[in-house]
Length: 262
Image (cartoon, rainbow, N blue to C red):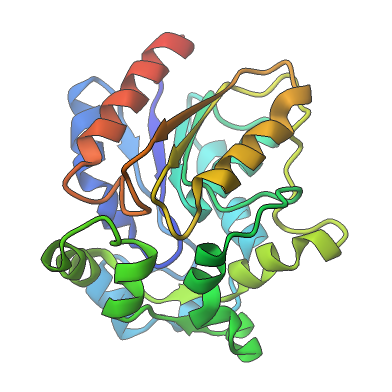
């Protein structure tokens, strides 16, 4: 059975995948959840000293995961959220991984939709050019808008306390300028025909990566013969894989993996 590698997104620690790891391990998968370059072992340790994340960009993160995958005995299934979902697509386009699942993935180059809520979610970083080289933490209020807009105030605050860490500003600047950048860091070979199958998951009330953005990315794969599926959860937000309803996404993911991987 293929191992599974979980890739976290911006502002979230890899510990957030623990419920998924326990579920997948119970189904026979060996699981891994490596952090980004500069992440520390725990949420508390990363908050205490996030300087290792300063200036870390999309290619740095992708290369770090590629090294992890290269050391594995069998190609893993890749499951990523937000920027982790973008990295999943980049790794598949490099020919790495047996299959991928991208949950509310940050936009690859070529996605044209730029909804207001996406801009508002990114504003805490993009509002200051110097943030490109720094790490930035979300306040509880900012997290409630970007991640927790479908949750109660108490659950959003608890998630913010439990799993959030400062995140590097550089990936957001790279994605926001991709249309004007040759060889942008968010470039993915969406036409590649010999990659593993990909499932994209959109959430209909997502403020950070709205459904229209995920659908735009899915359309970019129309020219590839490789399997690319799309599933939407209409009433879920950006916190979907992290909050009380995580099991719904996890069960859908497991069913898809069972149907489309050996």
